[in-house]
Image 1 (cartoon, rainbow, N blue to C red):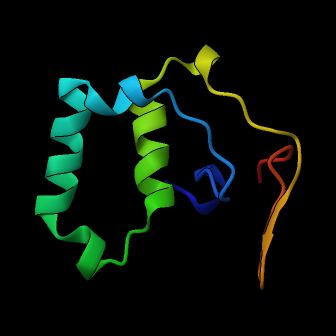
Image 2 (image 1 turned 60 degrees about the vertical axis):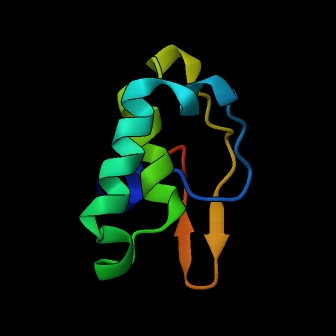
Length: 81
């Protein structure tokens, strides 16, 4: 994923039923077993983003129209590069 494609921020709403689907649970198991969280320092944002992009229908994902800013990182969700 490119940086601007990742859903950043601590403002997420999920239907918990997504996380107990067998395919999502298998994905999380594979993420955990791959070691990427430790070797590549994957955080919850890219993991959550991949779950949303792969398992959630596009019309069920809503992005609020405000920019995300954290220290030196600023992303505007309205404008892709």
